[in-house]
Amino acid sequence: MSTRSSNAVFPTPRTASIDVNVIHDRAALDELRAGSQSLAFVPTMGGLHEGHTALVRLGREHAAQAVASIYVNPLQFGPDEDFARYPRSLEADLELLERAGATAVFVPDDALLSVSHQRVYVAPSPLAEDLCGRFRPGHFRGVATIVLKLLNLVRPDKLVMGKKDLQQLTIIREMLADFCLDIDLVAAPIVREADGLAMSSRNRYLSAAERQRAAQLNQALMRIAQSRAPEREIEHAREELSHAGWRVDYIEIRDAATLGASRPHAPRVVLGAAWLGTTRLIDNIEFPA
Ligand code: AMP
Image 1 (tube, rainbow, N blue to C red):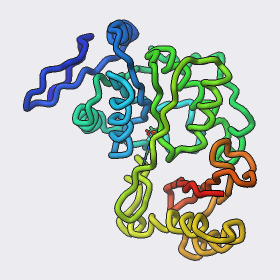
Image 2 (cartoon, rainbow, N blue to C red):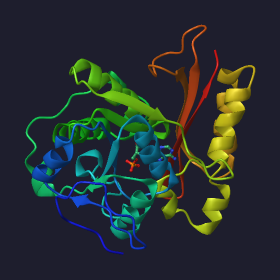
Image 3 (cartoon, protein in one colour):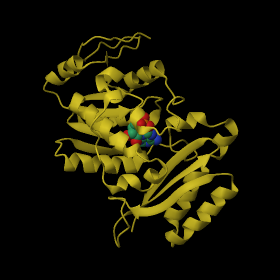
């Protein structure tokens, strides 16, 4: 595989070899942006799978160009979390992104984002302390801060994010609105494996035996979403997962749009986070009022 590291702007001639435009600096981004064509941005942390490539394809439906970024953001990992072992597979990622139709891939280095010298952070709303935030203090502050930095560098028209990380998506939606950013947020549906497991970079951590059971979280949430008394089904789901060897962080039903308390006659969502061995998985399923 050959990858270009130039400032060249798409279209790249399609040949048998994979040839995606990899950019590292602000000047190359500015050059990409200089064309009048609209630009969709897909931030990722790499370790890519079909959930990510679906975002790129969706980006191409909403804009002439789709730029993905690959950056494992140190600000969003707690001191005891998996930053060091997070999947890093740049070559394979570039190949996937090129096939998905990415116009360019932005791979910033720490020096450009200068997170080691970060003085000012985005302070998200109290939602950042709820749900996953209860178990990952500072996580969404780190996410919002890096996303704002990336948006300022890439300056896209559209931001494409996945509903798999629904709390992240909701917090970023709030940030775009409250900071008057003129960027449309495009929310992509969750891409799943055949057995219902939500695709995730962290699925690579699962042993073969764990992978066989990993769809149990999705099945538990599905039973809640389909129940006539979903609130009552939560305790049952918790017990079932615990018996099956999971450690449940939370299972909650919320308003699908805000992730606040569910409201009468408004769509709801059941969200869950649980550990299978040393792997923490999250999932959510929206369901009608
Ligand atoms: P990550 O690389 O895990 O930070 O994810 C980058 C983007 O891909 C985020 O907007 C995620 O919500 C999205 N994403 C990850 N997995 C999936 C999936 N299975 N389906 C849809 N979007 C996803």
